Image (cartoon, rainbow, N blue to C red):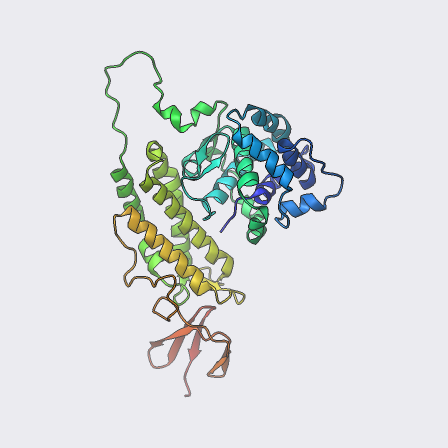
Length: 400
């Protein structure tokens, strides 16, 4: 899971700073002053560092000044400030990295609903940002920062800020072709699609635009193509997570965002479009959550729960699966990805979908198992496989 906040935006920019950007303090101070020119930063780096790692909330007077800008119909002044004062702090070859990283953070922030306006300069919603590939760079940057400063409590990002490291940013390198930068906001505004391109009447019949039913059909095909139903319906706290499945989910999300969603921007205000966007966001977040809690096996074929993975993994993974099944039901008019169904969120009883943990240790054939949340499956007469929440052990029973 990612959280869009002032700190996360700063971290992305710092990873992509130019020579003029100099330091985190310089970039952080410049952004603060773009909203509140009279705010005194001082020479101490403690505050800027605390803001960047989400240890502190932003000063109330900075937030108040930013909210005044939100209330203004004309954001030209803010655009110009970002264009002249912020953009030069960024490596020109890294602008696409910044846009893609911010898109990814927004997409994986489950606190933001699809119809929430996140770019407060151009007015783009979360769903529209996810589907867009053309941006006015300084406008997008100013709009997202404006949202982060005025809407999100900065300390809320503390739980996820550590994931925004060099390794995270490296995935966006060399992806320049995925982002197009334009100078005119009308070229990406949703309203621009309704403006005639020519004044002269034409006898040509415009091709029919894809309908909501077409989106559902393509979505369903992608579900089948990438085996998403099996992925969602499998309890990976009890069954092995194969790396092929992890890759299939990544390919599924990429396929939707690059090849499907752009075809339906004209219906981006419709509920089904938002549900599809949110489904992609949630399954990506689910994949990411397990990625943080697991490591890859030596043979590279499966993912194994880390010993540090806490008892909460049962509840967290089940919550993700419930949400995906709920969204699928909304998209497919009552369909389900579950064979057996999911327990209610307030159901604390042990079911096939959840397994009770115990604090005591168990001894099996002389091997101490610190986590007894496992199930047994018999393989022949000689071996038992313990499929655990932490690891899979093959225990040889010969000699019993």
